[in-house]
Image (cartoon, rainbow, N blue to C red; front, side, top):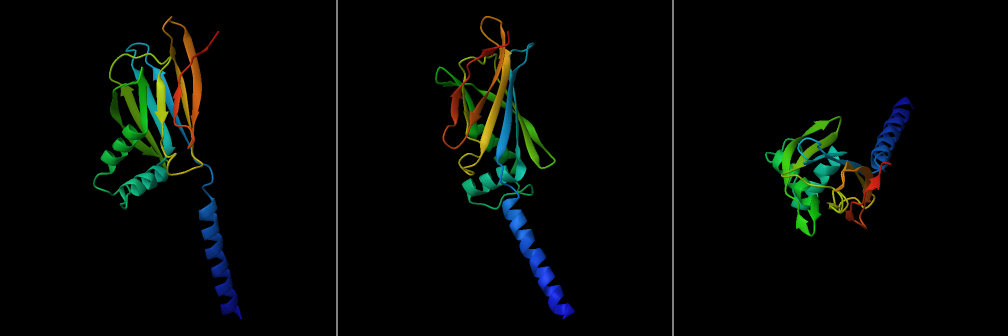
Length: 174
């Protein structure tokens, strides 16, 4: 009787583990911050996304097994962010430098900056990071800087599978 009972307990634990892992990740969100450096007037960008979600998206797009051990891990992460996140002004893409990324507590934190001085007002942000892979993905882009008249402004934009492009319109701080 104890052996049968033990098997049931093991089976129940196994199924509970499966259900927990299947339902444990129900929120899909990411955050990007755009800040204009007051000294250089370049846009500094920091993205924070769940690492295994990014890896799954890359694996799906490239039809490969993809993890940190992959020989092109750094390159594929860079390419993914560069393809899925862009800035444009007057329908002209703003060139961005890739500064790198780090993995901290399961999050990929990626860094970019504009190659030249740039202003945020009327900039069109495209953020399709993970939105084509996960329909529940919601991305927030926070921004702060100075407008063309020298006034400080800030705000945020929200992106999901229905909308991956938005224009920055300042909310004045005073």
